[in-house]
Length: 272
Image (cartoon, rainbow, N blue to C red; front, side, top):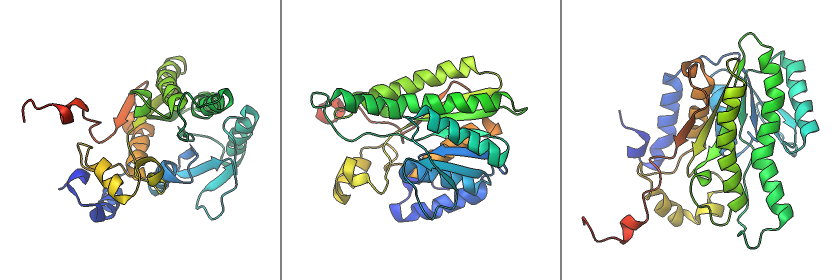
């Protein structure tokens, strides 16, 4: 069977549906919170968990109509709002099995131009928010016979230079360290892992990668020959949350299509 990297773009939808039919991660009945799970990568994560039979609860700072999931308004930077969110989930559903800390992001602003207020808000959203959600979820999960699983959505931006998103990259580096620390502190009842996300094609790809021609050129630099789909990230998160990953905790799973080849390879004349 062909892999996603060998398929033309128009065939990816077929591949996704085939994989969905073929894989059962036994998530039926799980109560799953996906923060920021309404668009982009978050929408892909929510869709995969729902397709696997989980009850998905998602949140964002502003109301979103027409979602097929339980939606709550929550600003993950506000600890009181987060506590209310978690308490509400337990009140409605009786438990909380999985949290996917997906809410995050940053506009492009160079470090020289970024104000202190801007940088603080980016770090609050991408690092302190996941910490707050995890802390409140952990209180619930520690009291459950089956414990729980927390999956943090991290980024390759935390592992390489990120011009234009310095605070974001620093926050994501912090997320990976936070993941390892919480996995130790909260074991054995709660597993904590992170998905290190590479370049993803979403409805806002042009903001990061330019027009369609530019997106195609960027995709050609990825060893697997394409950008990730939001569902690719969803499958990684669902695996880490499932019993198939029951002995995986404190790990960072890189989902980047093979990574970014060193730039010097384009400049060198050696071995060509």
